[in-house]
Length: 61
Image (cartoon, rainbow, N blue to C red; front, side, top):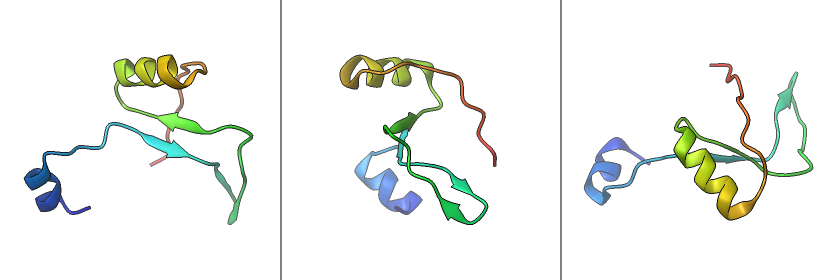
């Protein structure tokens, strides 16, 4: 979504659902969804609603 459209609608991305990493050039599926967020409060809220554990995760890039 473009920044202009996001500003007009008033949306912002607070996290992402990830289905798995890329190892080499091959996608690898996770057994469960990984939800990433830059804000620990968002991560806590998602874990509260969907279940799961909040963990630190080092992003590459």
